[in-house]
Length: 214
Ligand code: DX5
Ligand code: ZN
Image (cartoon, rainbow, N blue to C red; front, side, top):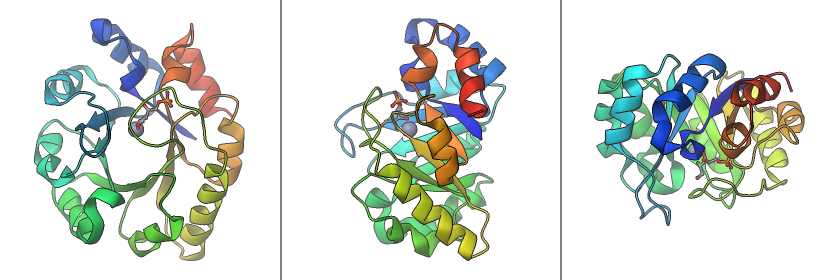
């Protein structure tokens, strides 16, 4: 599995050394962007992303928890971001055109859903999106408890992706740690997002390695 640690759980007073840990141990670098409207929290914006982009040695994976994700695609591309996910709940009928806009900018497109959105809502985008992001907590805050029903949701999506012969990756985000990583792999997850379990560990690089090997 791939590991995409969430920078949201990093020590923002020491971002350079935190990104350096990710350069050593991560597959992707997960950047949680929140606008205070789509979710009841604000995280960080381009002042942080521009700075991280200068030192990131791994692909950046931006997770847009914002009402208007399409406003930011160009700036993310200019920063060299490789993976961009936005929420189906925000995009609605514009989901397919958002995927195309992301592709036109040379980036990979992901469609994300919160735990209360039926997984079958993603099925129309199989064959279009490069990846899907299944939230295993409600988007908005790090450090929440993993919702176990997410395992069934991942299996359901994986089954459909495989049945259609597509190769979309399934990313899971929220409450992920060594206690559930193996179960997530068995359910069909390809990319694990982990914030607190990586950054609260005394050895972040070892924590990333054990998630990858789960
Ligand atoms: C939540 C974010 C997550 C979060 C994960 O809205 O999308 O990426 O940072 O944090 P943990 O791993 O602590 O649940
Ligand atoms: Zn996220």
